[in-house]
Image (cartoon, rainbow, N blue to C red; front, side, top):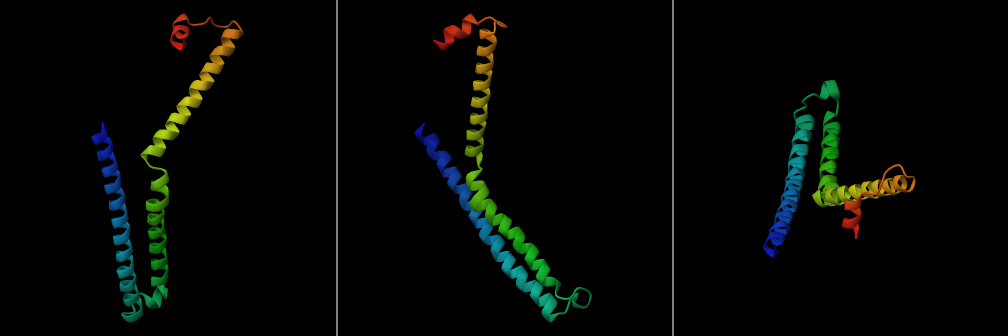
Amino acid sequence: MQSQEQHEIYEKARKRIRQKRRLFWHFVVFLVGSVFLIILNGILKVGEEQYGNWFVWAILVWLFFWILHLGNVYIFDRYFDKDWERRETEKLVNKHNIKVDKLEKKLINDGVISPDPEKKSLDN
């Protein structure tokens, strides 16, 4: 059992490291790409007549996507991972079971249904 837990911890750590490495490389590609776009527009004058300084908008859009990637790695995935999903599912199932038990007790008290003898023996 201990080895299974250690393996899960190890795999989770590897996944986080992969996410951070991809984020880093995304940032490097963003920087290199931005310089390339600046050179294309500023020095080679590609599209400058039709669109002016279009590279600024291209870089801003790319920056927006990089910020989304950053948020995914450090905020969303960290707090909304599989463990979070499991915990939230358990909460909802427990809420549902409590509502069903309350409804069943109300129906028994109102005489609509009779108590289930098997359930009573399981509860005790």
